[in-house]
Image (cartoon, rainbow, N blue to C red):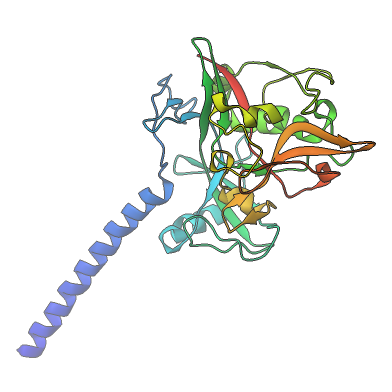
Length: 310
C-alpha cells in the first residue's frame, strides 16, 4: 500500500513538473521576443509598421528598427531551433517568426572573447547567431516646433569610412547610410518623417571648405560633438556625454569594443596635416580624436543621425 501511494505521489509530482515546464516555456517565449522599449504610436495599423514611433517615458525617441540583441541562452533554445529551419527572408532581408523579425549572421568579431550584453553568449567567428530586430532608440540632440535632431543612443553597426577618401561627399559610409541602412532601418512610414538635411562637411577649422551634401542619414560633424546645446561638453577630452555602448549585432559583425562595452565611432569631419588626412572620431571613452589614414579602418562604429519633422 505504501509503495502504491509513493508511486501515485511521484506521478503527481511528474504531472506538476510537466505543467510548470509548459508554463515556463510559454513565459520564456514571450520574454525572448519582448521589446524593452515602449512609445506613443503615431499610427495604429501594426500590420503595416509594427514598430513603435514617438517619445519614450525616459526621454528617448523611437523611430525605425534594426538588428540589435542576440537571441541566446537556454531560455531561447526553442526559438533558435525554429529559426534554424527558416530558409526564406522578407523584403527587408529578415527572417520572420511568431510576429517578430530576426537577422541571421555568421559572426566575424574583431577579436575573440566578446560577450553579449546579457552575458549569455560569447561570440565566436564563423558561428551562426540570430539578432532580434528592435526599435531604434534615438537621443534628442535638439528640438524645435518643426524639427528634431536625433542621434542613435547605441553604436548600431560597423563600417569603413572609405578605402580611399576622407571626404564625406564621396565615401562609402555615406552611401551605406543613405541606401542600405535607410531602406533597412526605416519603413515607408518611417521615411515619411525623415527630412533631407543640407550638411556642411568641411574640417574642424574650415567647416565650409567642402561641398555641402543633401542626406537623409549621416554622422554628426565635429562641431556637433562639442556643442553644449546638444548635451555634450565643449572640450575634446574624454567625457561620458559622448560614450556609446555597442549593440550585440555590431559586436558580432566586426566592431572593436573596449571593456566589452564601448567603441570608437565616426564623425563626418576630415582631419589633415599637409597632404595627409583622416577623420575625426569619438573614442571609446568619449574623447573627440583625430587620426591620419584612419578612414581605412574597418572596425570603427556607426552611430547614425537624422533630422525629422515634428
